[in-house]
Figure 1: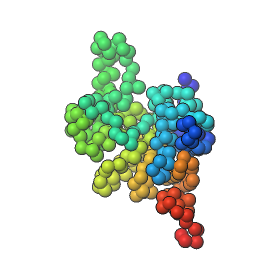
Figure 2: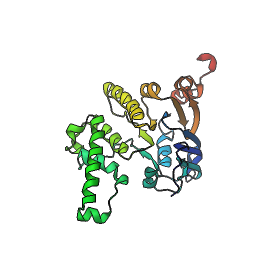
Figure 3: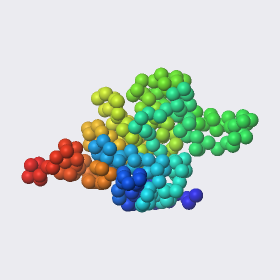
Figure 4: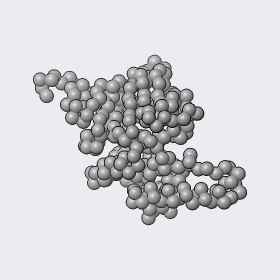
Length: 266
C-alpha cells in the first residue's frame, strides 16, 4: 500500500460516477476535504447521499472517476483498507453489535490498530494482554467523552436510542480517523439531544483534530455547524458553498419544495 501523504487533502473525489444497470445513481461527484474541515452533504430523499458515502468507504466501486484518501487512490481498495488509511463512518441505520457490551463495541472500532498476532491472542501472551489493556484504556477515554463510561459493561441493546447513536460515533473514533463520515447522526433524536449532538460534533473535530463530513436532514444542525455544504439532487451536485449561499440558492429551494423559484421571488 502506498504511504499516506500528510500534505494531501484527507479526501479528494474527482468526477465520481456510479451506475447500477441503466440507472445513474451518482453523476460527476467532486469533493475535496482538507484537514479539520466540517462539511455537510444534504439533499432530498433519494438524492444519492448514502451512495456517496458507500463510494467513499469502498462499499461500492465507482463506474468512473477517482477517489483518494490522504493522497492514496482507493477505488480498488476494500473497506477495511480505506479505514486503515484514516476514514471511518457511522450508518443511517445503527449497526452496533447488540449482544456485546458498550466497551466491547468501542474496542472493536480500534481493532485495525491492534499489534498482536493471532498466535498471541490464542496463547494470551504478554503482548496480547498489554495490547488489550491499552485498547480498553483508549475505549474508556472515548466513552467518557460521550458520557457512556458508567454503561461500559452494559449490553449495547440495552442503551436508549440516543446513547446508541453516541456509541456508534465513539466506535468510529476508535479507528483514529483523519476523516469521520456521519450518516444522519441526529436521526431519531429529540431537540435537546440534537443540540447536545451539535456541541459534541464540534468538540470531536477540535479535540481530535479531524475533518468531518456529515449527511443530515436536520437543517438547524447542518446550518449551525457546517462551514460549507454540498447539495445533491438526483445524484447530481446542484450547489456547493457556505450555509448562507446554499440556503438562498434557487436550485436548492426548488429541489426541496418541488417547484421552480424565480430569483425575483426570493
